[in-house]
Image (cartoon, rainbow, N blue to C red; front, side):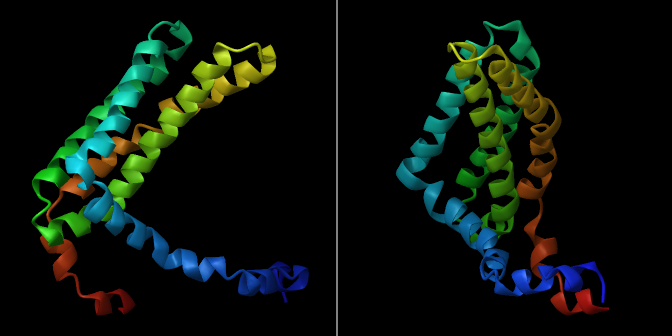
Length: 176
């Protein structure tokens, strides 16, 4: 029978309706991001987010324990600014923008994750919370920003890459 059947995990998987919903949602959300949210107010909304990240960078520079965090956050922000600019400039090329949607969503979400973790650690550092808690916040922000955040750079090529490959790919070849 196996572990999965014996423990009832298979039934939980079948009963969890979210798994079937989740499969298609990332693409839909990504298309909404690049098709509607990004161009909103001429890009001012996402630029406002970038301004918040830059303001955090100024605060992080005051603390040596955040050197790596600030460095990686700045580098990731520069990469996402570049891809955002490319998307805004190519908004009329629907195929190119939609092909870039999912990697851009992933790229932006990793940047925002780093931003939120760094901001939370900075806030904790300026609080009267227990030292162990503050230390854990700083360490987890450092880990994310120094280990996960650099993945943003690898997604730039997928965002700004040639959409012809994706559009010409024969999906039936996946079954070969």
